[in-house]
Structure formats: structure tokens, C-alpha cells
Image (cartoon, rainbow, N blue to C red; front, side, top):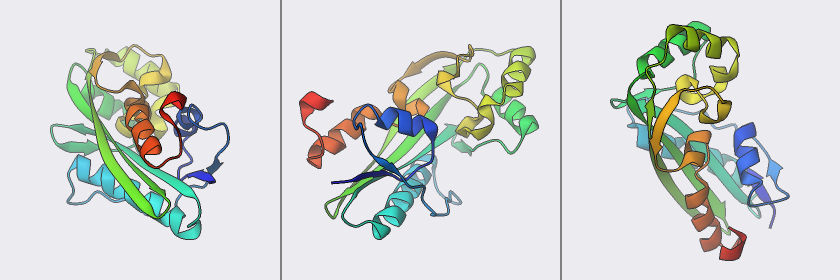
Length: 189
């Protein structure tokens, strides 16, 4: 069965390659939304919408949709609009604990599995200089919450939960879903 990742995220492609040597990438045309939804509801809504959009065009394929959101005090922090917004988001997160939630939806063989994985992340009390250097690198501009845990900057003091979830795809939970769908056996995880 052909496997399709309904995302253009290079981080998700890299993580999914740990399960499959070959898969297709077809970004979804689904319009993401979060108005009136909690962070968990938004992540799941968007993941389901992305997977369903691509699966409708490829009913004989296995399709994975995913959406990652960052939440601080119940407020969803999206991708920054520009460098100034990225700096503001990072200043808001510094020295505080927030949640990273990734909704994943796997549609295979006419069956859907969906879940949300949450990781708690605590930032160091970042200096304005470090924030400015990081934002100037351009790395945070396409990421929810304006950061990537994998970017190599000293932002994260600690985290509780799945590291790969913070990168954009919770491999532990995805492995369980793939096994349930008969797409991998436990030894392949």
C-alpha cells in the first residue's frame, strides 16, 4: 500500500523516514482553522482535515495528516507573521512552561485512527540578545511557537514527554497506529 504524508514539512518527512524508506509527499489543500477550539481540538481538527483531503483523492493509499500547535496558558501560539512577531512570541515563552500538541490522523484501508500527543516544554529565561540572534537566523519563522527544539539554540531547559512530538511528529504514538493498521510490525519500530 502506498503511504502518503499529507504535509510539506521537512521535519515530518525526516521523522517519517524512520518508518518508511519510500513514501509520497502530497501537501493537503485543507484550510487550517482554530477559531473557537482548544489547542487539542485545533490540532486534531486540522490533522483530520489534512488527512481526509488527501485520502479523498487517493482512497487506496494510507495517508497521514498532522498538525502541531503550541499553547501557553490555553492560548494557541501559531507560526510568526514576521521577525518582530517571532521575537514577541519567544519573549512570551522565555522562562515559562508551555505545551506542544500534535494531532495525528492516519487513514488506511478505509479506517481512521486519530490522536493528540502533548509534551510540556520549559524554556530557559532567554536574553533579548539570544532571541534576536535566533530570529535573525530565520529558523523560527516557519514553526509553531516560533521555535524548533532541534535547531541547536539553547532555548529549552527541559521537556516532559515525546521529543519527536515537539519536532512535529510523535513517533511513539505513530508507531502504535501504524502497527494497528498493519503497516509495520513491532520489530520495525
